[in-house]
Image 1 (tube, rainbow, N blue to C red):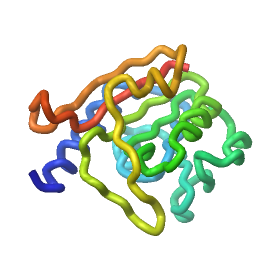
Image 2 (image 1 turned 90 degrees about the vertical axis):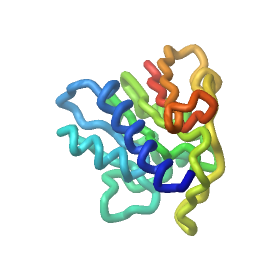
Image 3 (image 1 turned 30 degrees about the vertical axis):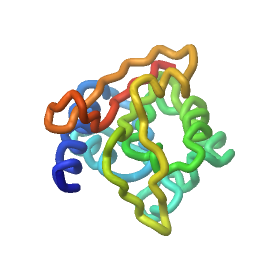
Image 4 (image 1 turned 60 degrees about the horizontal axis):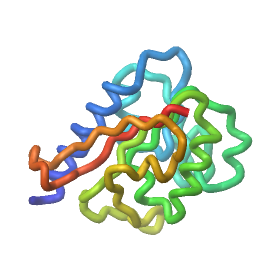
Length: 166
């Protein structure tokens, strides 16, 4: 298995989960971490505002999702966080702050076995997520989860798509 195989299936999973879960809306979506998900959402005709701590040219909100500064950002109906939590050292703070930013829902796709992929000095790669992680991060919230398997092999969990109803 090579990295490009994982990357291809990762993009397929992201697109599938976003197409299935991001409903038609006239309001912008807040995407945490400018990247693949922002591009996919834009290709689907969605209005996207991004929050990123280091991409000064593209982010609408330039701050770290773990900073108190996010409290000054207005709420968005939908907050997406795709392939970002694994790069945040204290992801549980990011999860708390996403709850502050989301008026209706949080949509995430997080890796399970995806290969290490840091982009130092901007970000590291610290975590992998397993089924049920969202119930721990967002206790008492309604959670919908979809598992994506590499090459459709039920023994190789590539990533987990999660929708949190706030």
